[in-house]
Image 1: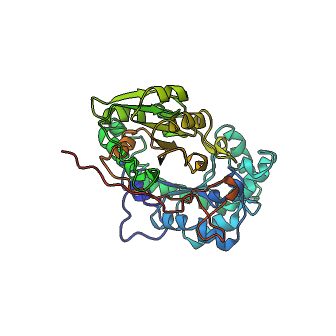
Image 2: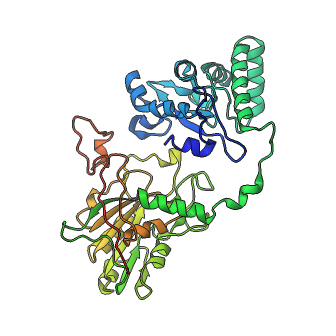
Length: 433
């Protein structure tokens, strides 16, 4: 993931000093690596929870991405809401100042998360003066205070004047923030350049996003047997059914943090191509595409479809709203799968931000595709389903059989996944005249 840093900031010059931030001009932006540290290892995956792991495990599993980010000149690093073995990361001086700043020689600035200092205490904001003392003292240089900023300023000023927080800590924070502002050229060009606005969402960018969709789709099942493959699907046939809550829902394709914090369902959030419209764009003009979001079993049986594409998954979510100990596809997804796939050959396309429970459906379906959150360019899904491009994607994480197995990682003594890390069937593109 740290390969995105030079894309955002520009390629790091060969003679750069280790850990010093770099931004190559006003057409680039400062990158932020987050959430430091162990955010991905919380107990049961609950947001803002406790990561229980040894120091060796923390450094070997969760630290490498930050080491790479610092080497690539990342400008800022954001601290996690989560805790490590019971200690809030926003208050962890050993890891923020001791390891990140001193050992890794990170010279950018450390920023809190939204109201991150408040969450040092339980309940949040119970002792804000204490939270400021330990958070700033831990090495946080910039504090995200979305609302009552005057309270923060007053409390911080008081603590500095009374030597509770030493001036050297303030000097360090100011030096780091100014360093990033200087390398960004904000003093020479303090106002945003709006000359690039017309490039947002342009066709070149959409084509790149469409390519990313094609390459990240993972084919998990293809056919009831090796000699009865379903994918790639024929473009020219009599009539096909497209069903499922996510087939014509751009908001669900994009997920959370799209325009709004939690994202929105439906097609009024942003512009793009739903999977349904991508299918209609792709098939032969004489192929009839019938869309029914949640058809009955009788409807499917009586319409003599050649095959069906069922697109189901999770609604959009972000952060705590995504906490889910069941990881099941919500209704009407299971009903749609049952009604459709028992009556006609079907490919099930899953839209989700993570592996979800699919084992109960494997015997009913002919093919299974993990499409993750493809975003606005649903055409990339149709590109691969119909064989204009082959499936090449591999699982970036283990796919479990049941949630009772979690957490489960490669190397565990009882590693018994539904689909192992790195799994992914492949297909060849169809050569058409």
